[in-house]
Image (tube, rainbow, N blue to C red; front, side):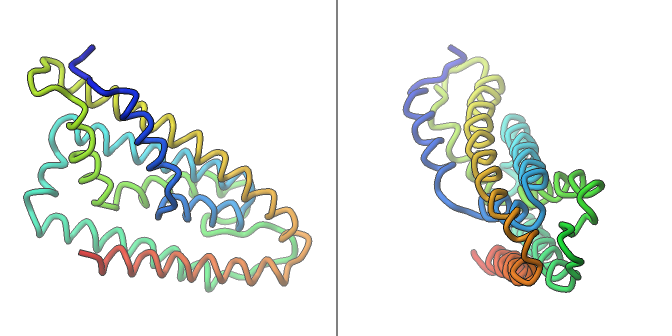
Length: 210
């Protein structure tokens, strides 16, 4: 169907890749710890939305630009790294007031949308994700397929679905700890600083890695 072969192998590999901790995983956990389940779920859906962008780009061949142009790859990589550093620094400088969950987007009632947008940006501005889709998905599409675009979308949709399920599990699990932090502001402040430092480290690593 659609020239897709080895679908079960693709599904298994995709699940294993989703389980492997990475930048997106740490972002979701960090948001859950600093803002609770609402922020964690928003981050998970933001990451999924960013992955949709990568799937569409791979389907129409735009990701090939990153693979062929070192300048384009470097520009996107530096932009993504700078964005993560920006998020981390803001969290490091933020003030924690009592038990209210403060985050980069503001108080909880207005912040989930901002976290969703941050999730999208964090994922979209990681060129390695784009190159991953361009390198991984074609292995399961027959060269003679007459519906390569649809095949890309089908495989990408599968990967997004399994990734979103795992991301939501992470978000809910990490959010359980946030309730404890909200009752202990001093501990919560330390966690905010730790998560901020984590984001800065991720940003530097993304910008530095070749």
